[in-house]
Length: 110
Image 1 (tube, helix red, strand yellow):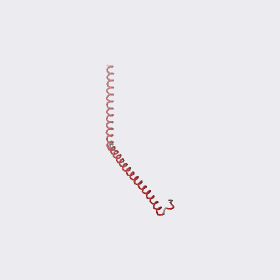
Image 2 (image 1 turned 180 degrees about the vertical axis):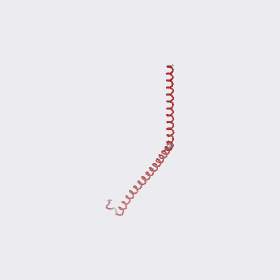
Image 3 (image 1 turned 45 degrees about the horizontal axis):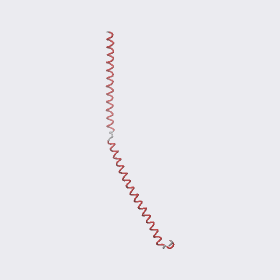
């Protein structure tokens, strides 16, 4: 039977049936793609939340700037005191050395 002998109504119904199947297949593919996209977005959000939590945990271990500055000031003051103490010790040792040298010199003179 050739297509020329098919009644027009049956031919149109056949074409509509083909188009309907094609549309249903496209719609099903769209739904699957949309579901996959939603799963991917949820997975991304979970990863983003985990990353954010990790960054918050990491930042919680950081020292606050005001605390850091106060500690640095304390260290610098202690360092200055230590350096000042070293200078005093050097001066005392120089005096002792000078006195020893003078004492030895006086002993030779006497």
